[in-house]
Length: 83
Image 1 (cartoon, one colour):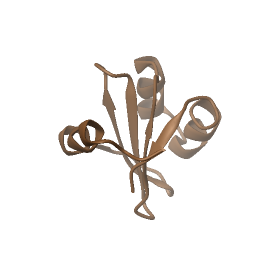
Image 2: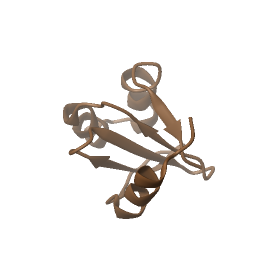
Image 3: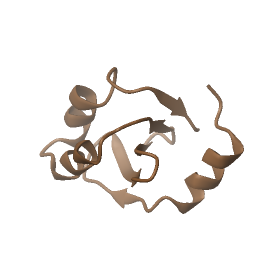
Image 4: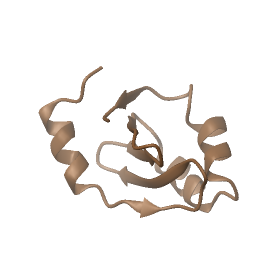
């Protein structure tokens, strides 16, 4: 699914939080739309849809961000690759 104009505009307003991870560079969350933004070190970015804020907070506090993302987000929420 391609990112539409509204989502592209949202990408510029996301407040990115750098994370300590060998795979994930930064994450952001848009509570109004329950969207989790994830930027990887390889340059790819994804937006996960309908993600509860508690999942985002758990990601920020996880001992392993990549493992948490794999177990709690991937294959559980729809997503759009944005880059």
